[in-house]
Image (cartoon, rainbow, N blue to C red; front, side, top):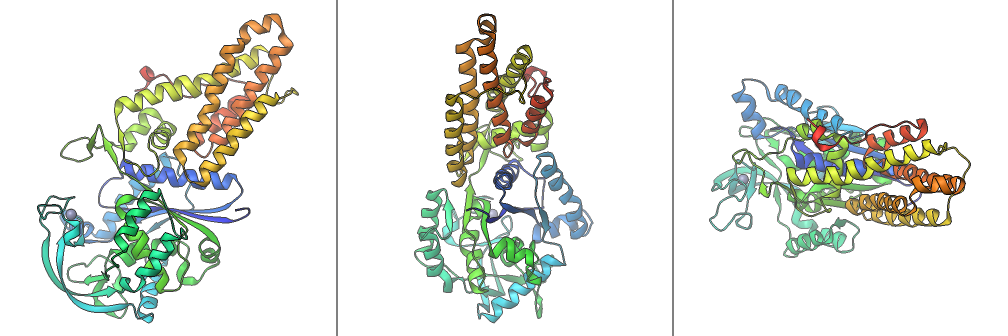
Length: 489
Ligand SMILES: [Zn+2]
C-alpha cells in the first residue's frame, strides 16, 4: 500500500430537496477515509457532488416557475454549505448539469458503449414509479404490488428506449465480486448482491423519450432521446477527473489508484452491477471497494415529512458542533448497519464521551502539566508501558482503518482516554506531587504525551477538535472543547 494513491467518493446527492442526515453521514465517512490516507502520505482525490437531472427536478422547477438549471443552482448551495459546515475536505464537487466535463464525459462513454455493441433500441413496456423515477420489476414491489418506497402502484408505460446489454457482463461481474477484486464491505452485502446476480442480470433501459424527460443529457446522434439516470449519474466518478480528455488526473487517480466508492445500501445494485458493466464495456478499470452504509432512522422510525421526525443536520451542527455530529455518526453507526438517531442517545454520547471523556481529560492533563511546570517540549522520558500501549493501539487502529471499520477505529482512539483516566485515578498526581515531585513530572508528561497522540490520530475523525487539542498543548492554555450539555442552546 506504500506510496499508492487513492480515489474516494461519496455518491452524488439528488438535488430535489434539502440535504439529509444520511448524506451527511456518507460525506463524513468518505472524509475520514480521505483524511486518514492523506495523513499517511497517500496522494488522495476525494470527490463528491450532486445529481441534478430528472423528471422531479423538471417538475419542481415548473411548479416554481423557474428553469431546472436555476433551481439546481439554488439547491446546490445547501449541499455545499453542509459540506463546509461538516468540514468535508473534498478535492472537487461534480455537478451533473456541468456541460463541460460531465456532459462531455457522459457522451463519450455513451459513444464507447455503442462502439462495443452494447446499446440497442427496444420497445419496452414496464412498470414505472414516478416517485422513484425508476422502472420496477415484480421483484421490487411489495406484497400488495405497490412501490415499497411510495406505497403506490407503479404505472404501466410503453416507450421505445435504448437499452444497455448488462446481461452480457453478468458472469464477469459475478467473478469480480466473488474474488473480492471488487470488494463489497460489509460482506453480508456481498452475499446479497451475489444472490441477485446468480440468475443473470437483465439489460437496463438507458434512455427515455426526450418528450418525457426533457431535463437531462441528450443521447449522441438522437435528439429524441435523453439519457436516463444510470449513464448520466454513475459516470460522475470519472467525469470529475476529466475522463473525456484522457487526462493525467484520470490516469493518476483512477487507473493507478485504489478506488473506493462510499454509498448507501439502496444504490448498491447500481454500483455493483450497472456501473461495473459500463466500465467493462468501455474497457476501463473497475473500482476496488464499495463501502456500503445502512439507513438512519429517527427516534426509531423512518424519517419522513409526514411523521415530522426529519433530523436537520444543520440544526444539530449549530447546537452540538460539527465534530460532535461527526463523532456520533461514526461511533454510533457500525459500518453497513442501519442505526437510529435519537436525541436522548446523542445527548448521552455527547455528555459522556465528549464533554466528560475527551474534553475533561484534556483540561485535566493541561492543568496538571501547568502545575508541574512542564510542557510537551520538556525533555522527559516516556515509560515503556506508555510507549507499548500507544504502539499497540496504533497497530490495531491501522488494521481497523485498512478494513474501513471506522466505528472500531474511533473506539480504539477513545480507549486511550480511558487508559489515561484510569492511570490518573490510580496514581493520584495531586498527591504524588507532594511526595515525589520528580516522579510526578514524569507521570504527567506521559499523560501529556498521550493526549498529544490522541490529537494526531483523532484528526481524520474530528479535525476541529484535534486542531484545538494541538493548540492547547502547544500553548499550555485551557479551552473548553465540549461545553456541558446544559450550556448548549
Ligand atoms: Zn417509488
